[in-house]
Length: 254
Image (tube, rainbow, N blue to C red; front, side, top):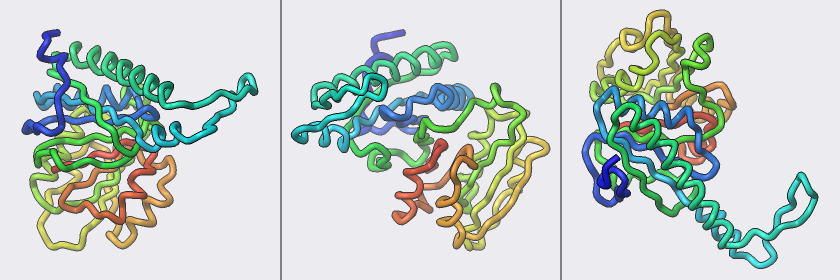
């Protein structure tokens, strides 16, 4: 690995056509990292890992008499700023090691950056329209090769343009041979869209729900979804609290 690849890349200097995976201390899913690396390899794109240092946790650690009880010993231990910062550093190192191991195996150029923010904030300011942004929940997703018999459920918040569907087709490349259930949220616009079934592996199922049902669908999603895909053009601020509670990876396309 060259020194250039080991250098961290800042989100303040956007590079076109990247795969970006954003994680935090609660979401270091090896399966999602593997998926992001595989997408980057298939599309021949660089991979940027972003580790978010949770400012809510950091601020709470600064409060006086902040404590937690160890469930195993029953003893009280103090949670202070230095211990939180140390945990951030350890998790960042672990994330970098996992990402580098997988990326080097597939010869994917990679870099890792860290930033402070709320745990599941969505940072679009410095992203290009062609970036694929994967937000890891760390809660549910299992790599398809280890659960081939299970049907993968994708919730697609439709953008209604060819660019979105070409990007969606690329996202499905690592899932060849899998059986998918694609739930398409119609946005009510009249643009012609490609035949979604033609983009999916043989045997996949397609269903539709109106946009008016999206909020309810997200509220009751539970563990029923494996991926949620949304375009930045159809991003809605009222959806952010629901999207931040997903138990599956969220993918945002330009």
